[in-house]
Amino acid sequence: MTEAVVALTLTGLSLTQVLTVLGVAGASVVALYLLKLRRRQVAVPFIALWERVLAERQTTRLFSQLKRWVSLLVALAVVAALAFALGDPRPDGVDEDARTLVVLVDASASMQATDEPPSRFEAAKERVRALIEGLGPNDRMLVAQLDASATPLSPLTSEARLLREALDALEATEAAADLRAGLHLALDVLRSEPGAEIVVVSDGNLAGERFAAEAFASRLEAADVALSWEKVGRRGDNVAITAFSVRRYPLDKSQSEVLVELYNASESRESVELTLLGDGAAVDVQRLDLQPGERLRRFFRNISGVDQTLEARLTRADGTRDPLPADDRAYARLPKRRRARLCVVTEGNLYLQAALLLDEYLDVTEVSPAQYPCEGRHDLTIFDNWAPTTPPEGPALYLGLPSADEGGGPLEVLGDVEAPYFDRFDRRHPLLRWTALRDVNIASARRVRLAPGDRAIGRSDETPLLVVGSRQGRRFVAFTFDPRASDLPLRVAWPLLLLNTVDWFVQEDADFVSSYPTGDTWHIPAPADASTVTLVDPRGRAREVPVVDGRAVYAGLHAGFYTLRTPAGEETFAANLGPGEESRIAPADALAVGGREAGAPSRGKAGVRRELWLYLVLFAVLVLLVEWVTYHRRVTV
Image (cartoon, rainbow, N blue to C red; front, top):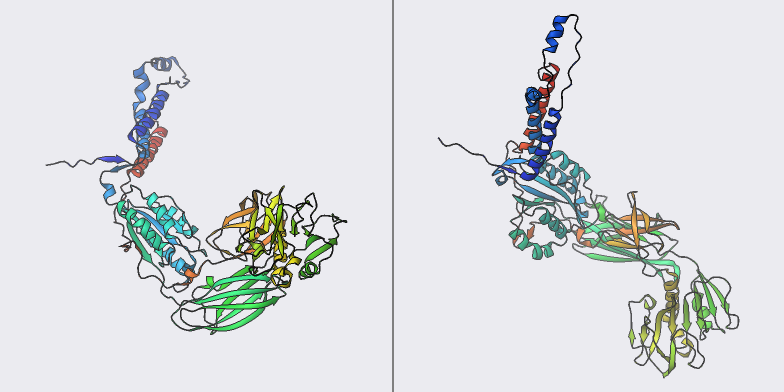
C-alpha cells in the first residue's frame, strides 16, 4: 500500500520568517515559565499540618520549574499554530484549480442607459455580484471601476465581504471608458498569478479598444491571461446633444450666439423638442426631425438677456423617455463681463474713438501726450502714434511707433518700409480672431528689430507689422504702422482687432472655454497666488484641488455646473459629456483585443477552502479555551 504524501507551500510569510517568529515567541514563553514560582501562603491550625507544608522542598531546580510542563506545551502549541498561520500554508497543487480575477466594471455614460432596468450600470453590478457568489474556495478577485481611468476599489482577495463593499462603492460617471487603462491595471495585478483572467463587464462601447488591440494582444498572450466579457445592454435607439457652445458677439457683448449639435444614433426617424434655457428661464424652443444617423446643427442667434449660464434640454416629441438621459442635457457658461478702464493718449482719432464706443463695458479716459499719464490705475494704456520714453506701469497698445530719431516705444526702429502687406499671420492668436488682414493697404511701416521673447503675429516679408511681447514683466502690442496711414480703419477688422486686444489684456474671453469635456484633465483659471481651491461638483460634493501656474487642475467625470471657490469669491463653469461616441449605445456584438475575442467568464469550482491558516487559528482558539477551563479547575496550576 502506497502512502500519499501531501506537501505544503507557504504563500504568506516565508519559512524563514515563520521560524523567526516561532523562535522569538517560543523563547519568550519558555523564559516566562522559567521564572521562579511564588509559593502560596497557607495558614494551619496545628503542627501536623506545618510538617506537611514544610515537606515541600523550596527549590529552583529546572526539574521543579518544569513540573507544569503541560501548560508550557500548550502555550508553545498556540505560538506554533499562530506562527504557521502567518505563513498561510496550502497543499501543493492548490493553485492548479485557483482563479485570479480582475473585474473591470464599465462606469461610462452609456452604462446609464435604461434598456436594462433600472439601468445597465445596476445590471452590471448584479452580474459582478453573481461572480462574487460563484468564487471557488481558492479563487481571488479584484474589483475596479473603468471610466477615463481604471480605479481599483478592493484588494486582491477571496473575502466576499470586501468585494461586496467595493461593489457598493462603484459610481456611474459621464465619461468614456478607456479599455487601455483597464488592461494596464489588470496585467500589472495578474503578473505571475495562477488562473489569471480579466473580466470586462460592459456594453462593449469602450474608448481605446482599437489601440488596445494593437498594444495588448501580444501582452495578454505572453502573460497567459484569459479575457472574458460579461455583456449588458439590449437597445441602441438614442438621440443626443453632442455639441454645445456659446460666444458673445465681438461688437455687442450684450448678445450671444449658441451652437447646438444633435445626433440620432437610432435606425429610425426621430422627432424631438429642443429647449434652450438662459439663467434658468426658457429662451427658445424648437421642434426638429432627425433622420437615422443624422447630425443636425442649429444656431440660436442674437440671444440677449442672458448673463451667466445656458442649458439645452432634449426630449422626444411624443413624450416617451430617451434610453440615455445623460446626453439629453448640455451646459455652457458665458464669458464673464467686467468693466475695463482704458487710458487713451492721443491728439484726436475718430476711428479709435468710434471703435471703443462699440463696447459699453469700457471706461475710457482720453488725454493728450502733454497730459500723460492718466490719473489712477488702468487696465490698458493706448498710445496713438506717440510713445513715452518710460514704459507705463501696466499693459500697453502702441498704434504706430515713433521714428528712430524721436525714440520711445518698446521696439528698436531701424528705418521705414514702403507699402508693406500682411503676408504671414498667426491665425490661432486671440488678437486675430474673426479678422481678415491679408488685403489691407498700408502706406508705410517702421522697420524694427525684435527683442528675445517678442513675437510677430502679423508681418510682411520686410518687417513685422503686428508684434506682441513683454518689457519688464508688462505686456504690450505694437502696430509698426499708423493705422490712419492705411485702409484698416475702414474695415470690420479694425474694431475687432482693437476689442480682441482689450479682451486679451484684461483676460476677458482670452482662452475662454464655455464648457469642459468630461474625462479630460481640466485647467481652470484660478488666482495665481493660491496653492489650492475648493471645487464643488454638480452633485454638491466639495473637494480641494491644486493650483498650478494659475490654473486649478482637476479630472472631471460628471456633466453639469461646477463652482470654484477662491478667496476672491466664487466662479461657475460648465462640463459636458465628451465626444459623441458615448451616444452610440447599441451594445457591441463582440469584444476583442487583436484577433483574440473575449469569451464568457469562467466559473469557480465548488469545494472546501484549502487555506489552512484558518484552521490553525481555530486550533489555537480551541487550545486556549481548553487551557482556560483547566486553569479554573486547577488542573494546570
